[in-house]
Length: 373
Image 1 (cartoon, rainbow, N blue to C red):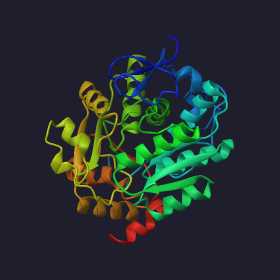
Image 2 (image 1 turned 120 degrees about the vertical axis):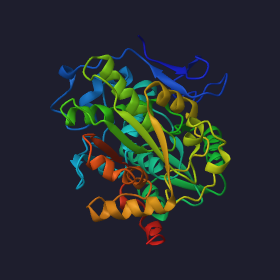
Image 3 (image 1 turned 60 degrees about the vertical axis):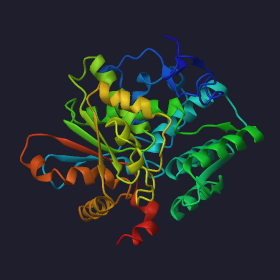
Image 4 (image 1 turned 135 degrees about the vertical axis):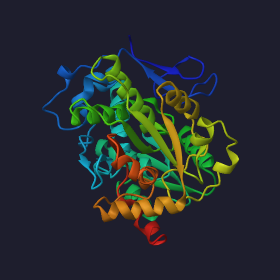
């Protein structure tokens, strides 16, 4: 099957990169292509996510744009039956690098050269896009919210990107980025919309399976906002089940702060108003109306996943416990462990294997951490 971008909502075909969302219904695109996972085709000599390039879209299978992302450690926690996937050890300190590397590879292979790119972000995605643009020598403009933490502001600017901070909602930040890109002839590559970014996230699932000897954990917990990692994780495990490499997909549990939990409300079919209060210490989990909300709910329902919420107190306690165990993460990353903490006695006494994906490095929000000590 030839690679195409297809609207998730109406099935219309989109022009890669030139249409950042469906011009007919406004829905997000997904990459459609023939998938065939095979252990024998893993490129063992490559110690990064590109060892799995043959299972990614054809536009990603040559000339990868890479800073060495992926191949992150999977280590046991001090608590029995619990493991951590250290995604904060990617080049810019967050899991976003997998998606950015994939997106920029497809961009280069499909469009060749562009005048520059524009992105909107709460911080980590913006830093990642800025880094890869610096690596490619590509002009980059990042739009962020006025409350973006100072470390992420500095990181974006250190890569040489232009950073424009916008007061107002997350939606307003996106609108400003889109309008600026259109006015200035830049390519809008918003990570919440770009379908190529999700394909790069599939490599997390491939790695987990390979690192566990093709016997992955029973349950995987991860923090979720825009849903790129969640969707990529489920798609990656689906590929391996369809290929007969795995018997089943691990149970995927998305975790959100109670103050901002649109996926939880949608998945549980609740009134979203009580779960969209905002102001969480989890500064990387800011999406109140993620473009792929319906897609996330559909995938969770199709593959038996779930969504949990945690309080601000739970997040802060979990963050401290992670640090005391040697894992220095962002507060946003600690949301996943906060959900697991509630089940520690049950987990220790069971035979279940639990994996928690730690998504962002603690150095990215140190000023904010001082406020919760």
